[in-house]
Length: 135
Ligand code: AMP
Ligand code: ZN
Image (cartoon, rainbow, N blue to C red; front, top):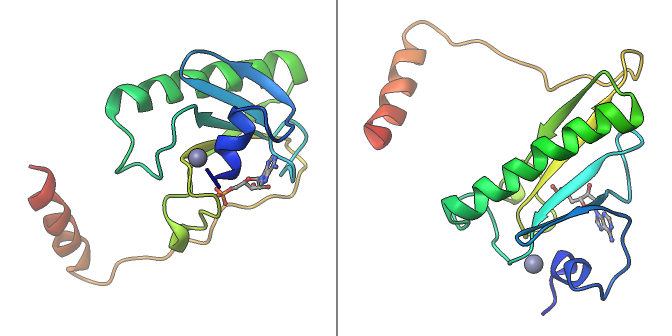
């Protein structure tokens, strides 16, 4: 077992735990965006969104909701971002699914990613390709 998050869940690597239940373990990110930045991980090893079963994902997102409220109530933050880097191309470094819950302050200077726009007719083509898989 070489996965660092599996080792954290098993207690083999220390972490600042903030929450745990039967399915989920949550701890402070070692390199926080803001104080209180928390990682919510499944106890079982799944790589990403495609691999994790829906029932496990539900438990994970329920814990994300609890942690978010605790950041508001416990740290007094006004809001937070929730993030999941899905696959290396999206910035996933640890291949064990986890949600980032990142406290935000009005004056923290953080910006979300830059956004572009669709050229004429492109949005419909893109939507159609996605719909074909989903519908
Ligand atoms: P990601 O890029 O979504 O895979 O995020 C991995 C996160 O894990 C990063 O934000 C790291 O700062 C964090 N991290 C890596 N090792 C540890 C550790 N031992 N304890 C807490 N957080 C960690
Ligand atoms: Zn793992």
